[in-house]
Structures are given as C-alpha cells and as structure tokens.
Amino acid sequence: MGKISRRDWLNRAAGMAGAVTVGLPLLGTAEDSQVGSPKSARKLKVVVAGAHPDDPETGCGGTIARYTDLGHDVTVIYLTRGEAGIEGRSHDEAAAIRTREAQRACEILKARPVFAGQIDGDTEVNAARYRDFSKILEAEQPDVVFTHWPLDSHRDHRVISLLAYDAWLRGGKHFPLYYFEVDAGAQTSHFHPTHYVDISSTEARKRAACYAHASQNPDGFYKDYHDPMNRFRGLECRCKFAEAFVRHVQSPDEALPLAG
Image 1 (tube, one colour):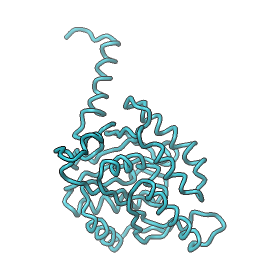
Image 2 (cartoon, rainbow, N blue to C red; image 1 turned 60 degrees about the vertical axis):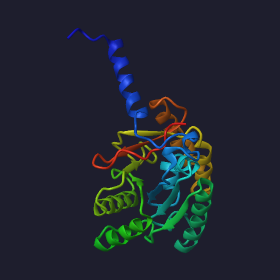
Image 3 (cartoon, helix red, strand yellow; image 1 turned 45 degrees about the horizontal axis):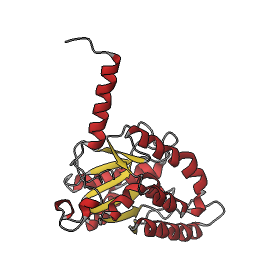
Image 4 (cartoon, one colour; image 1 turned 120 degrees about the vertical axis):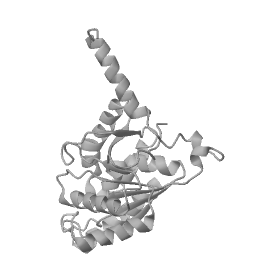
C-alpha cells in the first residue's frame, strides 16, 4: 500500500464523518411527510424521558420539534416535577410553578407532558420503581425513546437513564434507544455521539421552550451551555445547529429526523 498523505487522511476522515451524519436510515424531510409519501405512511410515537422539567427540552428540544413538525406524536416524560428546584420555595410551590413551565414548554414543542411521580432530589432505583416506570413506558407504546446519558453528574439524571434502560430491556429491545447530553462538560461526561440531528430549522423553538422555564434562569443554562453546545454539534455535522445522541448498540438504528 502506498504512503497516505496528511491531506488524503483528512479527506478520508471527512468522508467517514459524512457517512455517520448523513448516511443514516432517517425519517425524511418535511417534503417527505406530505400525503402519499411512503416515509409518512406510519406515524411514530416518540418518548423523551428526562429527570426534571427543562431536561428534555435542553437535551432534545430541537429534535422533538423536528418530529412534531413531521406529524409524529411526542410524549415527554418528566420523572419529577422539579420540587427542589426553586430556592426559597416549598416543594409544593416549586412543583406547581415548574409543572406549569413544563406544560408551556411542551405546548411550544407540540408535545404531551407526562409526570412519573418521583421527587426531585430524592429519586429512587429499586424493583418497585423499575416496575412503575416500565408500566408508564409500555402504556406509551413507543417507536423510539430518548433519555439521559447514564454518565452524568446529577443523580436524578442517572436514575431516569437506568429506569428507561431497564424498561427497554423488559420490552425486548424492540425500539431504538438513544441517549442525549445536557450541559456538556459540566454535567454530561464521556459522551461520544453516534448520531446527529440538524436542528437549524427548530433551534428557535427549542430556545423558546427552554426559556419557558423562567424559574431556572434560562439565560444561565441556555446561553452559557446549550447554545454553544448546539453550535459545536452543528460544526461537527456541518450545519448551523445540531443535537447529538448515542444509540445503544443493540437497538435498531432508525427513526431519527433527516437534516432539513
């Protein structure tokens, strides 16, 4: 074999990155979703499972909007109502405020909120909790599930990740399981994406959904962490804004929205 120059190596690497980003079995563009398109024959049920109000929006909001724009159904499962998330407020007061914020965020993204009934900062992983969450997920009959990356600094994030993973195992691994990132570098670590979704057309709605969580200082978490993260992931897959995911290697590789 002849010697490979640095330029040849870079060209090959760029081609491989393009294959990872573009050469995926994806849903299709907005045009593909028109009546009569074979790609729009079946409406998908998408579930995004997060620990607190604002987690699904920050990690997956642009992708949620892509799905709903294509006519698919999205349910957002919040493990808690953010009871411990507002300083100086009781758990009941904080839960009421953050529930309203989550409902408003889901309206913006055209998704349906579901609350799983655990308590912010006091979440549990045990046999009963595994059973309870599996029942919630089974009732949704998902075609694809997104949840937190399990290597995260927040305990509640790790809890929902384990609950979703266990439900996926119980369900026979039939649906694709994808992990999302939040506050990359501050909370999510050791995250090496396998898939990207171009959210350039929906970033404004993702931002609006995140800013619906006014009690959480969205200028701080969005401007400081998620806007740079969206831009960086976009650079990786050659678009303006993107969200990145890790697909569980044993799950079907399908059901992500095509860049549009």
